[in-house]
Image: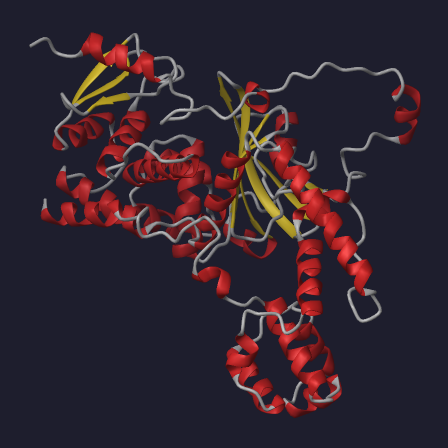
Length: 506
């Protein structure tokens, strides 16, 4: 038990050890490629050196120096040392986070703006940034961009906290390759404590984990409708639906997710970002219990050796849902197999509900970079799968996108909220490890170019543009404000009344 306690203590510090997400702190003082490039250019021109002069001094082509100065490539430290020597400066002079001049500061800001999601959604060409761009024109363009950002932020004020929190969490998980070693150790310790060594985790063993943690299970028919489970920490009880969850008799996943929050000492979240992170951690730990790291990695490595990785096989081997298998694959694929990957969960309406990537694929996003609630391109596998009659076998497709060619496998799962496609994809260079790579299905996507799939053909627009007035059927979440309270979406009064009714009578 001592080993598990130590692992639990480590996992408990996951949230407290994270850097602040409020935009302050050391991260802001670190220079980026744009600032470094501008400082190189400033020092070079101050010395009266041309591109050719600097290139010759560091034994590089002028085009390479130009790429560095334009911030299009991160310089290696050895390059920085050589450049500093050639310019008679120190490396610290190049790594300063401060732009070398007011003009450079404005040019850097505009360059960042033109590379950002707002410019992309506007569908306009960026201006060429250089000496020929008048100072007043530069300032005016930036003022307009700032005002557009302000208006977008103002209009999105109600759901903005949730959208920003989602974006920050997605970026954080991408940086970690969707792998949390602390939680892997917690899962390993729990499974060892109950003596589970291999194979799928049965419902009985999940109940033993609950007992090991000091909880009793109670299956009820009146669980509050806004909850999947309820834990009573006073009497150490876990309440689960007697009819299963969403029509499934097995409540293993809901039980493990509920226990995970207790194991990780989750407390009342202080904001929506903390709520989302707690949910990700609970889901991660539950999946790590159902598909333990060691046997899961062995299974996937064996499949990779056979060039036969299939999410369905991982699902069947550990008795989990396709979505859980897909999630778990993203946890293990990059860290243990060296495979970059992306994941999507898309509603039949085309709306993106969940997404993760570390392989460079470009998800649809709004002007603020949020991907949740955006329409996925109709040419992508996640949308094409809804048109496939064969729902028994997985659907695989190659898609040529603006960020490269990707192979993706997808499956449709039906829920009370409608049908969803769950998709896992990899860059073309890694498809050789997967079953389904022989598919002849191939599509091209030009999104976010509206001519790809969003703009109606001209003849249809001319015929119906002035006569169509559809009534949209949006999800309630698109219209409602973000749920308030300690646990967004949960009716606290209903939960308290439920616990009062079911509590043991002294």
